[in-house]
Length: 373
Image 1 (cartoon, rainbow, N blue to C red):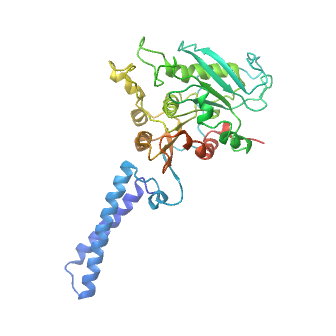
Image 2: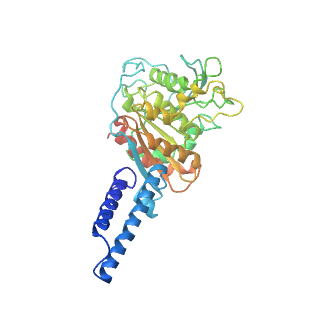
Image 3: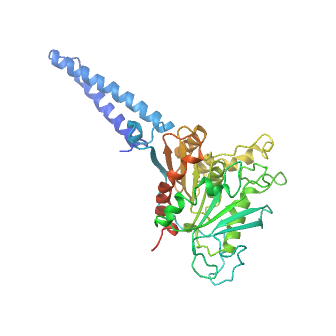
C-alpha cells in the first residue's frame, strides 16, 4: 500500500469508523476493570487512527514523505513516486517533423571524423540564431542508413551549449551507461537557449515584437534542423528533451508544448514556471499570456501526452516545491515520475549519480532508447 494516494487514507478512515461504531454500540463500560481497560484501549486506538488519518491527508497534499522508506528514514538516499498515466511505451502521435529519407544525401559534417560538431544556425520559424553543438554516437557514419535516437540537451543559466557536457557528465557517467548497453548511444544536440547570450529568455515565445521566440527555436527549429542534418530515428519514441536547472524548466516546457516531437522530457533540478529577470519580462503587460507557460495549469486543464521524469532535492526548495505541485495535478495522458533526493541542494554534482535511474526510466518509457547488441 502506497504512503501517498487515496488508498491509505481511505483504509485509515474506514478503520476509524468501524472502531467508533463498536465503541458507541458497546454503551457504558460494564464488566469490571477488564472491560474498562478494553474500552480505554479502543478509545486510544481510535484517537491514534484519527491522528494518522490527518497526517496522511496532509502528507498527500504537501508530500512531506513520498514512500514508506522515505518516512522510516531508510538507507536509500532517493525515493521515487509516479503520478498520472502509465509512462511505459509512449504511444506514437502524428509527427510535426519532416524526416529526411534514410537514403537522402545529408549535408557534410563541418568536422568529419570527430564526434563533436559545431554549427551556427538560424531557425526557419523563429528566426533566432544560435550555436548548436552536436555529439555524435561512436562510429556514426552519415553515409550509412543506420538511424539513432535523439536527445536535445539544454544548458543552465548562465551557460552555453558546451556546459551541458559538464552538467550531465556526458564523457563520464552517461558514457559508462552507453558502454554498458544500459541505453542506446544517441545523437545529443546541445543548442544555445539564451539568445542572445546575455538574455534570460526563459524559453518562451513572448508577445510579437517583444523578444526572441525561444520556445519555437528549441521546440521546433532545432529538432527540424536535426532531422535535416543527421540520421535520426523517426517518431517521438526516439526523441527526448532534457536539461538542468534553467535548462530543466525549459525541457519540461518544451516537452509539454511539443509532445508530437518528444515522447519524454527530463528535468534535473528544474523549476516549472518562468522566472523572468527584472530587466526582461515580456509578459509584464500581458499576464494572461504568461499562463501559457503555467505547467500546473496545463497539466490540470489540458494534459498533453508526455512522459516527464523530474529530479529534485528536498533541500532545493524551489525545484522540490514545483515538482510536488505538478505531481498533485498530474493525470493521464500526462505521466510524471519524480526522483527525490534526501539531500544535495541545487548542485550540479547531484546529477551524475541519478543518471542510472533516469536511464532505466528512459528505456522503459521510450523504446527507441533501448540498446541492442
